[in-house]
Amino acid sequence: MSGGRRHIGVAERRARLAVRHRLADPARATAPEEVAEALVALHGSDPATVYLAVGARLAEPAKTVPETERALYGDRTLVRMHGMRHTVFVFPAALTAVVHASTGLTVAARERAALVKDMARAGAPDAAWLAEVESSTLAELARLGQATATELAAAEPRLREQFPYAAGKSYEGVHTVSTRLLRVLGVEGKVVRGRPLGSWTSSQFRWAQAPDHPELDPAEAQSVLLGRWLHACGPATEADLKWWTGWRVTEVRRALTAIGAEPVTLDEGGTGYVTAGDLPAVTGPSRPWAALLPALDPTAMAWQQRDWYLPPELRPLLFDRSGNVGPTVWWNGVVVGGWAQRRDGEIVWRIPDPGVRAEAEQAVAAEAERLRGWVGPARVTPRFRTPVERELGG
Figure 1 (cartoon, rainbow, N blue to C red):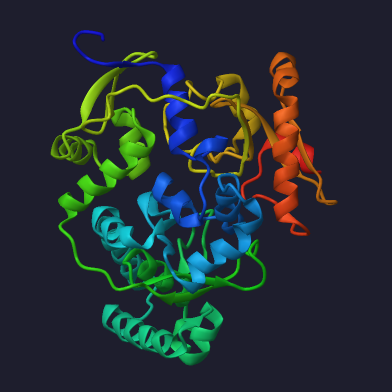
Figure 2: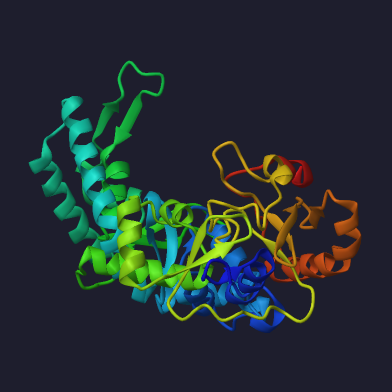
């Protein structure tokens, strides 16, 4: 205890991560739904990340591709949609209403206003015309079930309309109505990402109607989402919470109060928070563990303040210039290096610290073999490439 508050040190934070993020052997999951429930959200900007994040946490990784496809496109127990910070994630279907109300509504209003403004500035058709196109597009999508943007434009030709954007700026260009409108509809919770074109690694996809969900009170939805994430990732600071959600600090504080979050002290100083009743010590795995996590993995990207699991000297090697993390090698709750897949399918890795490398080599090699076994003939190149991944992958 420190000043009457429970202290949660780095060792316990790493133990919580190992168990709650399903990374160590005893805690591994039996289905993709369990992984998504444990992590709240899987990054979905890069389609392969979803599968790689699931595969790293399944007790039987050979099931990764068929079971994840079943969950996403068969049973639709998982949904790929826009969420926090206007980023595409995969959520448990039961959370779609919570995500929409807690984060989507504000972003959606901003995105629609920007689209209408950009079209008006370019002399393109007005908001009434856009509303007609939207209604027709949604009707066609309902008729088709799932469709690409090209297929929707064939059914509703007005989607092909183009308008100039940022004329006179260094980044000026031409936007197509379909691109901007479908993005707005995604943030508004009206459409979601559907089955990809090609294999599970493909970045081309179809659109599908969003699942029906009730309209929730935004403040209540924020409390639910924050409580779920804090159980998975607590202790976390206000800065972590604000960064992950994209909310204002006043919204974060209101949600923390609403769920009765309990403050704790941390090794690096400052105040962290856990959910009510989550103060008892968490016992970590009894044996050392290793993991190979993909680019944009939700564990590596969960916190804004990362020194307790990510040595600062490794950041320039493992992140791109926009702050996206690449593939990471983990040893007992710490990022120790990076990995890549070569063109021949071999999984290769680098651990800069020779002492850690010697200690972890056998376990990391086993994880690499495990990964190569279920990935099979597929080749995975991250959408956002980092220095180590580029060097190792060739």
